[in-house]
Image 1 (cartoon, rainbow, N blue to C red):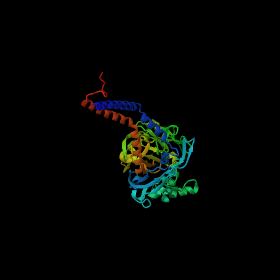
Image 2: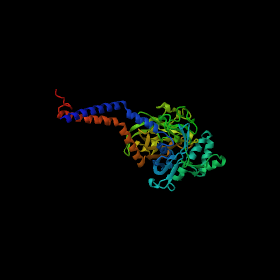
Image 3: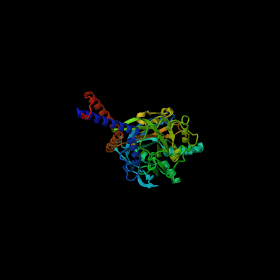
Image 4: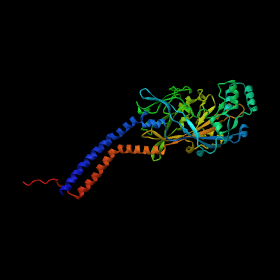
Length: 472
């Protein structure tokens, strides 16, 4: 009985210590603070870190899928009717995007880099052969020239239009997918090139974009403040743009979308500078998701990103010239596309004014197929799945002799998902973080278990002193 009494006393002492220490650690959040502090220091773009290697050579494969809107009733449209289109594709390309010419600046607090992109066709993920398949689409060089002539007299515009028709240049063109994407020698641009050599005689939606970069970037490494990790300091030497009509719209905010700071919460807005959109956009939390066994937060552009200035006055700065605004869901990027009458939107005018959707037959916007989103692991801030969707449209309202229209030309979908090896490493890292962060709870749990054992011992055995007193 004496040994059992001693065991009860010992169990009680250990139980009390475990509960006191465990509860104190939980309240003080010592281990959580330690982990967060370590993450803030480790997640930086320093040359020797594993994070830097992942930033320099992103491991997840990135795919670009291109779809085209094939015009099925050109004659009816030219006669004043509603255009009808049929989506064809995808034509899929693997995108390689290593960072090059990396140079650390200002004691490692900033880093300079170029991000050239190379595209390689992937037949097994494509719907056809881009060098064979023909698409009937809007002749953008034709529209651009007629748009430039808008300030001239009706007589001159008519003469130019008749001349272009006489040499076979019309509003719609039939070209292979490869030509429309990667470029062809355009007869109209060739004529102009002979008079103005500075005008390129080739045209393509991705002309000169294979093997080239989107500009010179300087990023914050996160050495000074973990919240600045990956944020853009300058782009092509600029801290703000000059295309738009307000200082707020011209700001270069956020990262390039490849990395984000650790310890992301659901309430914050994430900013990305999209060079192809000539602006920064923000993303808001949507829901929790799981990717390859990894818990993540999904962020997506809210509806106010492309909302009409009537409903979101902060977007008035994207009207150029000031006051010349389009409706909800579209953004005119002519200011940074050499004057071409180009408008971007989400695919099938998702989240756009119904007037754009109803103007063309063959569009069917829906969230599942047309939403842009980014799935981030909140502890590390690492993107583990991304889907960027965009649509290019052509403004036809200023083309003399043709109906007013916002004509959908093509759309792209850029996707990337963390690879299996990186996912396994991420799961291991998160398991370690979870175990360390929850270590105080484990201590409390052990204390509770010993408390239950102590109760059982008390019920089965009366308390007796561990040592008997000597008889006098």
